[in-house]
Image (cartoon, rainbow, N blue to C red; front, side, top):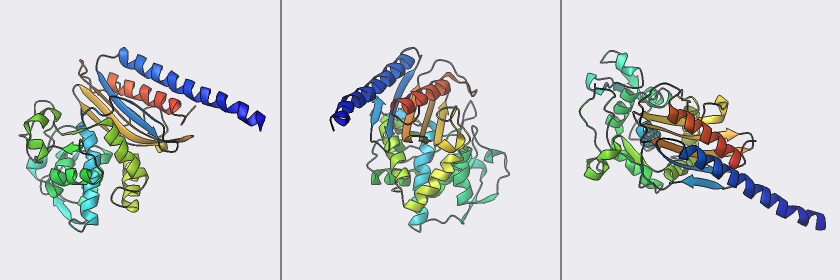
Length: 299
């Protein structure tokens, strides 16, 4: 017994040292970066958390597509929509940016199931607008209210990118508020996104079956330059977002020593760069690795 008791302080000291090392490394990486970084992570097995500005509202960019997907699953579960119902691609739905549906002919009919999958897997902006048109941005916000996520708001449809922007449309009640205009497509906090991810992993978003299917879709998401950059594909279920000055990524990481939910947003970057090696992507990747090591999920 004396031997066992003697080992406890060493174990606690080692855990504290690991966390302190993580904190020092993360803060050093942020201090040397031209931009604003907000993040939160939670080891879902141990409950240990770590955050920097985790309760501050951030622009979502395409990470709002995760809440939109959750709302679509709710509408189907409630009988207000069906996965097999067809949605017609209209010219007014098409927007530039990520995705491929804008290249298809207007009048194409697609099952709601396929449109939602394209919204996540290839982050299709046109698909996103089709889903919002079908279920409304207000329905997305009502779904987030179910989980107490009051800062996570879908504001409107996607405008596109570059100079080929559509007129703003599809506003939610939150999106019509002048103070929310600066968030663009949506707002959230890192902590709220991690809460949503944790609920997904627990099977608490819509239903256990729906949560499981949403995680499977997130695992097939093809943009993994951030959290998933240096991780095995099967480890990561994530959704990323990009704007001229922003990169963000939210995801569940199934690391060898535990499951970690994390959300990292990098904003106010000076240089516009849409290559995979965008400085924000690289920073997110590096921080993700630090978080996994510091929270005890990976050596």
